[in-house]
Image (cartoon, rainbow, N blue to C red; front, side):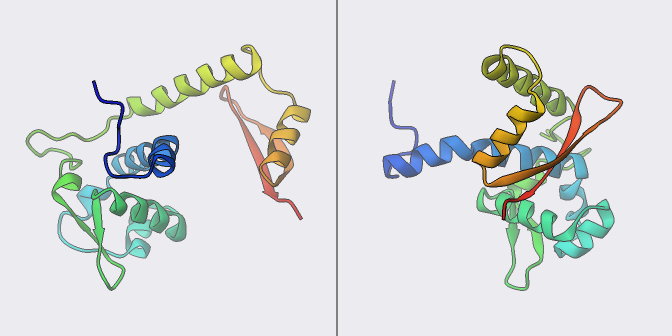
Length: 161
């Protein structure tokens, strides 16, 4: 068994990759859910066009696509358009041996949050005061907590001034 997970990388950078890997998995899940690979099947498209097709925010979608491009899922051309790579093509629906991420990833994310909540709060919901402290530690200011009909609330924050 080897203890080196990212050969050739400085230990700090390898650790950073491990710590931020969840961003990539969430981006991959989102791209699969939105059907980005299917939208790129006919050729390059800009994030504005993809955002319109998926009814998402163009700037935010561009950031997600650029993150996925760093992992080789898509490629960004010089003109800013995104193209499908062989890795990304495996996310297309209806192709042989498709590896399209199914919607069950959303429930896995919920399970991860449940484990996080169990470990960090003893299995109880955080209070508004606890959320305020978390937001302050992150350089944010809690604006409001909006209850929903689901088991989750929407927590709104803004950069602290």
